[in-house]
Length: 71
Image (cartoon, rainbow, N blue to C red):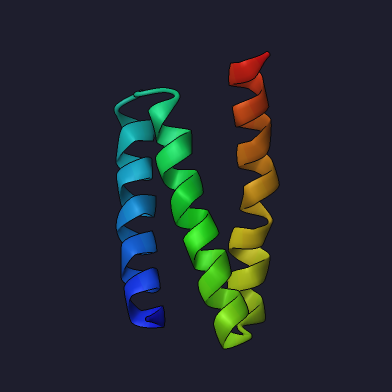
């Protein structure tokens, strides 16, 4: 299961990066944010502090983007 979470999250993060480079907003933050959540879950399940630090700290940054869209 963790294998699929990691691969799915990797694909989402890469698509999010591509959408950012193509300036497709706000879809880019939703796709990349979903990938970051997936990697955070994978980090939690494997007790990998590096993954939790990297992707866990990205989630609040994406939240500011979500709030920017809503307000």
